[in-house]
Image (cartoon, rainbow, N blue to C red; front, side, top):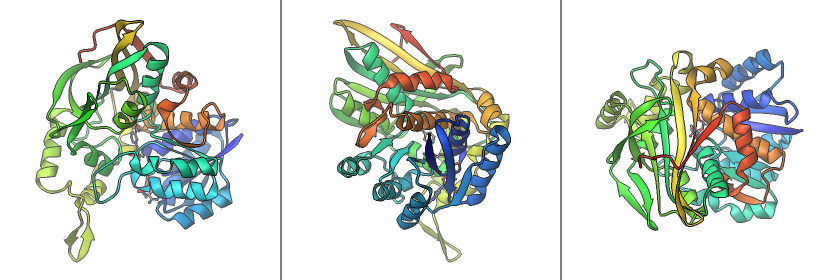
Length: 400
Ligand code: NDP
């Protein structure tokens, strides 16, 4: 019987709020607070229509620590679920510390002026969260999030030693737009235009963006061009599973998407440094975000599925073993249920389940944690129960 404060009112927050609202006993009171209050109100109204529940709404600038502290003190949530942007991770963690409130997010901190994400900034809070007697759970979406739980599940039930980990993320959907990103365009374009990076024998190896490509086969989707990218969960997984010799992350992109992206980069629209336009400072990528389709509104005509999973090689009882664990999610079913497309759904559902694990004390502790540090079993039971059933294949061919 708990109170949750959701920060942010995009597609991911919408899905998490819908899923929380459907469980009255665990999520007794829900507040959605975001920069633009009207967006919180739209979600609250839709929830009221569907579940006959009142959700509180507030305006908040999540970069303003005193305002956050005031809001948290007045609502007194047991948990803050941060579903705004990675730029706000540290201010929200600070406010949680000052009010001794648990914290969960889906993306690791990124400074606005540098397209760089790593856990160091948030791991640095370990001591202070421990002393305050509260917990922070980092990266509890799908990737990061479920991919870490999948890896832990494999380690717990199938392997003595995980040696090779490939996280494979395919969006086999079609939204009918010439170009759109599936989550916040600014964060998404910053992520994929960076150099690639993977882990091999204790070292990180850098690649040019989109330099390494393989055709991989995804269940129920087929073969897709998959590109090696750097992704944040690799950092925590190689730390928490030190037997890993190689860890890589692959994401699919179509030719049309890559052509648009190349043009965006070539004409300077992916720049994140401010420029002067008619006497006003603007950041080209932030301006571009305003004219691109809103990922939260792609759902209506979105067909096809996402397929995200972990392909793992290692040893059990001295013998070589392979393992593939994945979920496929239909954009249309996600939209029919929540009004949001599959990428928001595959992120919002795990955020809700992580929140549930904390509130029900199935995941507990004091300090800062990544999801793979907890028991994966109750989380994965809920993943199936709340709309993202997963499958597994033992000793099949992994292509990688
Ligand atoms: P959106 O851009 O749709 O939504 C972000 C929301 O945050 C908007 O409502 C926005 O408000 C709000 N916001 C932005 N800045 C502030 C601020 N300073 N104070 C308060 N609110 C603010 O993003 P998504 O819903 O697509 O994604 C949400 C998060 O999920 C992102 O951090 C993203 O990186 C992460 N994500 C994680 C994935 C995973 O698998 N782990 C996958 C996909 C996304 P406004 O409307 O006013 O702009």
